[in-house]
Image (tube, rainbow, N blue to C red):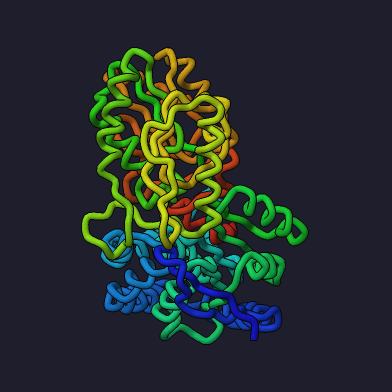
Amino acid sequence: MATFQDVDPATGEPIADIEITSPEALQAAVRAAREAQPAWGDLAFAERKALLLAGAQRLEARADEVATLATREMGKLKSDALREIQGWTGGMDEFLDEIGAAIEPETLPAGDSETALVRDPLGVVAAITPWNFPVGMPLELFLPALGTGNACVFKPSEHVPLVGAALHECFSEGLPDGVFALVQGAGDVGAALVESDVDMVAFVGSRATGIRIMRAASDGLKRLVLELGGKDPLIVFGDADLEAAAECAVRHSLRNTGQVCCSVERVYVSDDVAERFEGLVLEKARAWRHGSGFEDGVKMGPMVSAEQRAKVEAQVKVAVAAGARLALGGETPAGPGYFYPATVLTGVEHAAEITREETFGPVVSLTRFSGDEDEAVRLANDTPYGLGANVYTGDVERGRRVARRIRSGQVGVNRYLGGAKGSPWVGARQSGFGYLGGIEGHRQFTVPKSISYPKV
């Protein structure tokens, strides 16, 4: 029996040895899902909803246990882990109703005929999920997959296998055999799942892995929903509320130890207010103390792994060597665990690696620009990514105008990005393929079918 070690990033100590799903067991899970799917898809949505809602109730009852696992496995503050779980369980009824609305049949009249537009499940969905939001991201993928009538094979990140197993326990209970399966392992298991007899791959993770998935899925023309990385800009014009903009820059560069796909990863601040803005950023960033996610007063836990921390360390060192000023942090603390302090860089060149490549760590990277609107748009768009962006200005019309010109799926104007309920979550350009959430996102897990007949 092959295993991998689940490690606590706050201590570097092992938590458990996790059995890796063998190739034979993975293929058996996919076959069982294939066999179970037709009957599951034939159920009325209300029946599927009731079974999934019961799973959410079991998760709610285990919220403290699962939050503790999340903190032990990937370092998230336990308070944040609890909010992640309770945010989902508290809104589950509404979320499932949105899935039901997405697949509600429509009737389209046309002269002497009518067309029934129905949405059929695709079949078997592979849901491959990340570690940074170990509850929210799986639910974002496997709930619409199951709710729309597909069977699902779920692979959580190898960094959070116990959280993944707990989610599977909560939601598989009461479901027909084979409808919802769990496989465990690292990238090779994910690759085998993509190449197996599935009809769709739903994935959240890095752009590099997304590219590999697209290549592997192409031979079978498998449907894809990929939410990939980002290099989100924050533009601060000279007339902005600098206090609010600095709070956005710091909070959304550092929360979850910077390990968020839509983190603020590059800040462009107008020359005429840059000195004052940089002072505000430093003042706020100094309050972001790191430590164990179980410790009171801590704002950041450890990074998920030694490898992820090393990547951030390297980017910061290269930026400083190229002329950026290390205004705060940047020194790896001694002792156990994969901690990295809140770090602020000023005078970062737009061409620097840390401005071009995803960091995924607790770094506020500040670059000055002339304050010109066209330059701001050019800098924001000078990237292959397009997940999110944020704009702060005293001129709301300018803010909206700039937001429309930035090529990204989400833009916040004088607030952090994030749409109202029902908005899809979109990775534009190379930050994604397809989208999640909202009625249109749920429909990604279905295929529309037109059935036309004469009017009676």
